[in-house]
Image (cartoon, rainbow, N blue to C red; front, side, top):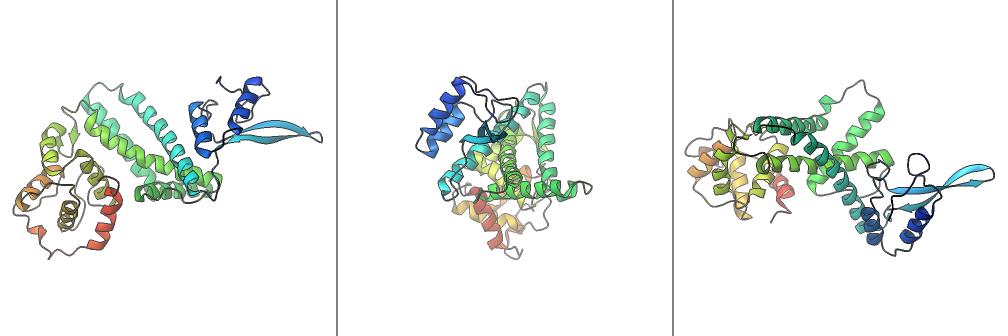
Length: 317
Protein backbone atom coordinates (compact mmCIF):
# COMPACT_ATOMS: atom_id res chain seq x y z
CA UNK A 1 0.00 0.00 0.00
CA UNK A 2 1.25 3.48 -0.83
CA UNK A 3 1.77 5.95 1.96
CA UNK A 4 -1.50 7.58 2.93
CA UNK A 5 -1.78 11.32 2.34
CA UNK A 6 -3.09 13.77 4.87
CA UNK A 7 -4.89 17.06 4.41
CA UNK A 8 -2.14 19.19 5.89
CA UNK A 9 -0.92 17.77 9.20
CA UNK A 10 -2.33 15.42 11.79
CA UNK A 11 -4.63 12.49 11.20
CA UNK A 12 -7.09 13.99 8.68
CA UNK A 13 -6.89 12.26 5.30
CA UNK A 14 -7.10 13.70 1.81
CA UNK A 15 -9.76 12.55 -0.65
CA UNK A 16 -7.54 10.29 -2.76
CA UNK A 17 -8.17 6.94 -4.44
CA UNK A 18 -5.40 5.31 -2.41
CA UNK A 19 -6.83 6.58 0.84
CA UNK A 20 -10.32 5.32 0.01
CA UNK A 21 -8.91 1.96 -1.01
CA UNK A 22 -7.17 1.65 2.36
CA UNK A 23 -10.32 2.68 4.24
CA UNK A 24 -12.39 0.03 2.42
CA UNK A 25 -9.77 -2.69 2.95
CA UNK A 26 -9.44 -1.86 6.63
CA UNK A 27 -13.15 -1.83 7.36
CA UNK A 28 -13.69 -5.17 5.62
CA UNK A 29 -11.45 -6.87 8.18
CA UNK A 30 -13.55 -8.88 10.62
CA UNK A 31 -11.37 -9.23 13.71
CA UNK A 32 -9.46 -6.82 15.89
CA UNK A 33 -6.22 -8.77 15.40
CA UNK A 34 -6.55 -8.38 11.61
CA UNK A 35 -7.13 -4.64 11.90
CA UNK A 36 -4.18 -4.24 14.25
CA UNK A 37 -1.90 -6.22 11.91
CA UNK A 38 -3.04 -4.14 8.95
CA UNK A 39 -2.30 -0.99 10.93
CA UNK A 40 1.20 -2.23 11.84
CA UNK A 41 2.14 -3.61 8.40
CA UNK A 42 1.19 -0.35 6.70
CA UNK A 43 2.76 1.77 9.43
CA UNK A 44 -0.37 3.83 9.90
CA UNK A 45 0.85 4.81 13.35
CA UNK A 46 3.85 6.77 12.17
CA UNK A 47 3.70 7.65 8.49
CA UNK A 48 2.55 11.15 9.47
CA UNK A 49 5.43 11.76 11.84
CA UNK A 50 3.29 11.01 14.91
CA UNK A 51 4.27 8.21 17.27
CA UNK A 52 1.39 5.98 18.27
CA UNK A 53 -1.32 7.25 15.92
CA UNK A 54 -4.50 5.28 16.64
CA UNK A 55 -7.17 6.89 14.45
CA UNK A 56 -7.66 8.54 11.02
CA UNK A 57 -10.43 10.90 9.86
CA UNK A 58 -12.00 12.23 6.66
CA UNK A 59 -13.40 15.77 6.55
CA UNK A 60 -16.95 16.47 5.36
CA UNK A 61 -19.28 19.44 5.24
CA UNK A 62 -22.62 19.57 7.03
CA UNK A 63 -24.88 22.61 6.91
CA UNK A 64 -21.98 24.74 5.76
CA UNK A 65 -19.74 23.59 8.62
CA UNK A 66 -16.66 21.37 8.22
CA UNK A 67 -16.79 18.27 10.35
CA UNK A 68 -14.76 15.07 10.60
CA UNK A 69 -15.68 11.40 10.44
CA UNK A 70 -13.42 8.75 11.94
CA UNK A 71 -12.88 6.13 9.24
CA UNK A 72 -10.05 3.97 10.61
CA UNK A 73 -8.96 3.25 14.17
CA UNK A 74 -7.51 0.53 16.37
CA UNK A 75 -9.30 1.39 19.59
CA UNK A 76 -10.23 -1.77 21.50
CA UNK A 77 -13.76 -2.65 22.49
CA UNK A 78 -14.09 -1.60 26.14
CA UNK A 79 -15.68 -4.95 26.97
CA UNK A 80 -12.92 -7.01 25.33
CA UNK A 81 -9.97 -7.55 27.67
CA UNK A 82 -7.94 -9.33 24.98
CA UNK A 83 -8.31 -6.38 22.61
CA UNK A 84 -7.23 -3.99 25.35
CA UNK A 85 -4.11 -6.08 26.04
CA UNK A 86 -3.21 -6.21 22.34
CA UNK A 87 -3.73 -2.45 21.98
CA UNK A 88 -1.68 -1.70 25.10
CA UNK A 89 1.19 -4.00 24.16
CA UNK A 90 1.30 -2.63 20.62
CA UNK A 91 1.59 0.99 21.76
CA UNK A 92 4.12 0.19 24.50
CA UNK A 93 6.30 -1.76 22.08
CA UNK A 94 6.03 1.03 19.51
CA UNK A 95 7.25 3.73 21.90
CA UNK A 96 9.89 1.41 23.33
CA UNK A 97 11.19 0.93 19.79
CA UNK A 98 11.50 4.67 19.29
CA UNK A 99 13.38 5.02 22.59
CA UNK A 100 15.79 2.24 21.60
CA UNK A 101 16.39 3.70 18.15
CA UNK A 102 17.09 7.14 19.60
CA UNK A 103 19.47 5.60 22.14
CA UNK A 104 21.35 3.63 19.49
CA UNK A 105 21.84 6.67 17.26
CA UNK A 106 24.13 8.11 19.94
CA UNK A 107 25.41 4.83 21.36
CA UNK A 108 27.06 3.70 18.13
CA UNK A 109 28.85 7.03 17.77
CA UNK A 110 30.75 6.36 20.99
CA UNK A 111 34.31 5.22 20.36
CA UNK A 112 35.26 3.60 23.65
CA UNK A 113 33.68 1.23 26.16
CA UNK A 114 33.83 3.95 28.80
CA UNK A 115 31.93 6.37 26.57
CA UNK A 116 29.30 3.74 25.85
CA UNK A 117 29.02 2.90 29.54
CA UNK A 118 28.63 6.59 30.39
CA UNK A 119 25.82 6.89 27.83
CA UNK A 120 24.03 3.86 29.29
CA UNK A 121 24.41 5.28 32.81
CA UNK A 122 23.11 8.66 31.65
CA UNK A 123 19.94 7.08 30.26
CA UNK A 124 19.44 4.89 33.34
CA UNK A 125 19.75 7.95 35.56
CA UNK A 126 17.31 9.86 33.34
CA UNK A 127 14.75 7.10 33.92
CA UNK A 128 15.37 7.21 37.68
CA UNK A 129 14.83 10.98 37.63
CA UNK A 130 11.50 10.58 35.82
CA UNK A 131 10.40 8.19 38.59
CA UNK A 132 11.51 10.45 41.44
CA UNK A 133 8.90 13.07 42.47
CA UNK A 134 11.72 15.26 43.82
CA UNK A 135 12.85 15.84 40.25
CA UNK A 136 9.44 17.16 39.22
CA UNK A 137 9.75 20.94 39.10
CA UNK A 138 7.19 22.38 41.51
CA UNK A 139 6.80 25.39 39.26
CA UNK A 140 5.29 23.18 36.56
CA UNK A 141 1.56 23.18 35.91
CA UNK A 142 -0.88 20.81 37.54
CA UNK A 143 -1.38 19.26 34.10
CA UNK A 144 2.32 18.38 33.95
CA UNK A 145 2.30 16.91 37.46
CA UNK A 146 -0.71 14.73 36.61
CA UNK A 147 1.12 13.40 33.54
CA UNK A 148 4.10 12.54 35.77
CA UNK A 149 1.79 10.74 38.20
CA UNK A 150 0.34 8.56 35.45
CA UNK A 151 3.78 7.96 33.94
CA UNK A 152 4.91 6.48 37.28
CA UNK A 153 1.67 4.49 37.47
CA UNK A 154 2.31 3.02 34.02
CA UNK A 155 5.89 2.13 34.92
CA UNK A 156 4.84 0.40 38.14
CA UNK A 157 1.93 -1.41 36.50
CA UNK A 158 4.24 -2.81 33.84
CA UNK A 159 6.73 -3.85 36.51
CA UNK A 160 3.94 -5.70 38.36
CA UNK A 161 2.68 -7.29 35.13
CA UNK A 162 -0.67 -5.50 35.43
CA UNK A 163 -0.51 -3.53 32.20
CA UNK A 164 -3.54 -1.32 31.59
CA UNK A 165 -6.82 -2.71 32.91
CA UNK A 166 -9.10 -0.08 31.35
CA UNK A 167 -9.03 2.80 28.90
CA UNK A 168 -8.09 6.19 30.29
CA UNK A 169 -8.59 9.79 29.24
CA UNK A 170 -6.26 10.55 26.29
CA UNK A 171 -3.34 12.25 28.09
CA UNK A 172 -3.50 9.95 31.12
CA UNK A 173 -3.52 6.88 28.88
CA UNK A 174 -0.56 8.14 26.87
CA UNK A 175 1.38 8.79 30.08
CA UNK A 176 0.61 5.29 31.37
CA UNK A 177 1.79 3.77 28.10
CA UNK A 178 4.91 5.94 28.07
CA UNK A 179 5.76 4.83 31.62
CA UNK A 180 5.38 1.17 30.64
CA UNK A 181 7.59 1.73 27.59
CA UNK A 182 10.29 3.24 29.77
CA UNK A 183 10.17 0.17 32.02
CA UNK A 184 10.90 -2.05 29.01
CA UNK A 185 13.50 0.42 27.77
CA UNK A 186 15.29 0.19 31.12
CA UNK A 187 15.58 -3.57 30.69
CA UNK A 188 17.03 -3.04 27.23
CA UNK A 189 19.66 -0.75 28.74
CA UNK A 190 20.52 -3.31 31.43
CA UNK A 191 20.86 -6.02 28.80
CA UNK A 192 22.97 -3.91 26.45
CA UNK A 193 25.14 -3.10 29.45
CA UNK A 194 26.19 -6.73 29.35
CA UNK A 195 25.81 -7.83 25.76
CA UNK A 196 26.67 -4.97 23.42
CA UNK A 197 29.24 -2.70 24.94
CA UNK A 198 32.31 -4.45 23.52
CA UNK A 199 32.22 -5.72 27.07
CA UNK A 200 35.96 -6.25 27.48
CA UNK A 201 36.41 -3.18 29.68
CA UNK A 202 32.81 -2.32 30.46
CA UNK A 203 32.32 -1.46 34.12
CA UNK A 204 29.56 -3.06 36.14
CA UNK A 205 29.63 -2.42 39.87
CA UNK A 206 33.29 -1.83 40.77
CA UNK A 207 34.67 -4.40 38.33
CA UNK A 208 34.73 -5.01 34.59
CA UNK A 209 32.15 -7.34 33.10
CA UNK A 210 34.95 -9.68 32.07
CA UNK A 211 35.82 -9.94 35.76
CA UNK A 212 32.22 -10.51 36.85
CA UNK A 213 30.94 -12.90 34.18
CA UNK A 214 32.40 -16.08 35.74
CA UNK A 215 30.68 -15.26 39.04
CA UNK A 216 27.39 -14.44 37.33
CA UNK A 217 27.45 -17.74 35.47
CA UNK A 218 28.45 -19.67 38.60
CA UNK A 219 25.58 -18.22 40.64
CA UNK A 220 22.74 -17.96 38.12
CA UNK A 221 21.35 -20.73 35.95
CA UNK A 222 20.79 -18.18 33.19
CA UNK A 223 22.03 -14.61 32.68
CA UNK A 224 18.44 -13.38 32.39
CA UNK A 225 17.94 -14.12 36.10
CA UNK A 226 20.84 -11.82 36.88
CA UNK A 227 19.10 -8.98 35.01
CA UNK A 228 15.82 -9.69 36.81
CA UNK A 229 17.66 -9.68 40.13
CA UNK A 230 19.16 -6.25 39.46
CA UNK A 231 15.70 -4.87 38.75
CA UNK A 232 14.14 -6.51 41.82
CA UNK A 233 16.93 -5.30 44.12
CA UNK A 234 16.74 -1.76 42.75
CA UNK A 235 12.97 -1.67 43.20
CA UNK A 236 13.38 -2.87 46.80
CA UNK A 237 16.06 -0.22 47.48
CA UNK A 238 18.66 -2.91 48.15
CA UNK A 239 20.98 -1.53 45.45
CA UNK A 240 21.09 1.69 43.45
CA UNK A 241 21.32 2.15 39.68
CA UNK A 242 25.10 1.58 39.83
CA UNK A 243 24.70 -1.68 41.79
CA UNK A 244 25.94 -0.24 45.09
CA UNK A 245 24.43 -1.72 48.25
CA UNK A 246 22.14 0.89 49.83
CA UNK A 247 19.96 -1.33 52.04
CA UNK A 248 19.99 -1.45 55.82
CA UNK A 249 19.34 -5.15 56.38
CA UNK A 250 21.56 -7.81 54.83
CA UNK A 251 19.17 -10.52 55.99
CA UNK A 252 17.27 -9.97 52.71
CA UNK A 253 19.87 -12.07 50.91
CA UNK A 254 18.90 -15.20 52.86
CA UNK A 255 15.28 -14.74 51.75
CA UNK A 256 16.39 -14.09 48.18
CA UNK A 257 18.64 -17.18 48.05
CA UNK A 258 15.96 -19.47 49.48
CA UNK A 259 13.37 -18.09 47.06
CA UNK A 260 15.63 -18.45 44.01
CA UNK A 261 16.67 -21.97 44.98
CA UNK A 262 13.01 -22.98 45.27
CA UNK A 263 12.43 -21.69 41.72
CA UNK A 264 15.71 -23.04 40.28
CA UNK A 265 16.93 -19.57 39.31
CA UNK A 266 20.32 -19.99 41.00
CA UNK A 267 22.70 -22.87 41.59
CA UNK A 268 23.10 -24.56 44.97
CA UNK A 269 26.36 -23.41 46.55
CA UNK A 270 27.78 -23.20 50.05
CA UNK A 271 26.90 -20.18 52.19
CA UNK A 272 30.52 -19.12 52.11
CA UNK A 273 30.50 -19.17 48.30
CA UNK A 274 27.22 -17.22 48.12
CA UNK A 275 28.72 -14.51 50.31
CA UNK A 276 31.89 -14.36 48.24
CA UNK A 277 30.03 -14.04 44.91
CA UNK A 278 27.49 -11.51 46.15
CA UNK A 279 30.32 -9.35 47.49
CA UNK A 280 31.86 -9.46 44.01
CA UNK A 281 28.64 -8.51 42.25
CA UNK A 282 27.41 -5.77 44.61
CA UNK A 283 29.66 -2.89 45.62
CA UNK A 284 29.89 -2.07 49.36
CA UNK A 285 27.86 -5.13 50.35
CA UNK A 286 30.59 -6.57 52.61
CA UNK A 287 28.91 -9.77 53.74
CA UNK A 288 30.99 -11.60 56.34
CA UNK A 289 33.16 -14.44 54.96
CA UNK A 290 31.07 -17.07 56.81
CA UNK A 291 27.81 -15.33 55.78
CA UNK A 292 26.64 -14.74 59.36
CA UNK A 293 23.92 -12.53 57.86
CA UNK A 294 22.20 -15.72 56.65
CA UNK A 295 20.93 -16.24 60.19
CA UNK A 296 17.21 -15.80 60.79
CA UNK A 297 18.11 -13.51 63.67
CA UNK A 298 18.19 -10.79 61.01
CA UNK A 299 14.50 -9.94 60.88
CA UNK A 300 13.06 -9.14 57.45
CA UNK A 301 9.54 -8.93 56.08
CA UNK A 302 9.77 -12.21 54.17
CA UNK A 303 6.21 -12.15 52.84
CA UNK A 304 6.66 -8.71 51.31
CA UNK A 305 10.03 -9.60 49.79
CA UNK A 306 8.74 -12.83 48.26
CA UNK A 307 5.79 -10.95 46.76
CA UNK A 308 8.20 -8.49 45.18
CA UNK A 309 10.52 -11.20 43.87
CA UNK A 310 7.59 -13.09 42.38
CA UNK A 311 6.52 -10.01 40.40
CA UNK A 312 9.92 -9.76 38.77
CA UNK A 313 10.68 -13.43 38.15
CA UNK A 314 7.17 -14.74 37.38
CA UNK A 315 7.60 -14.80 33.57
CA UNK A 316 11.17 -16.06 33.53
CA UNK A 317 10.87 -19.76 34.31
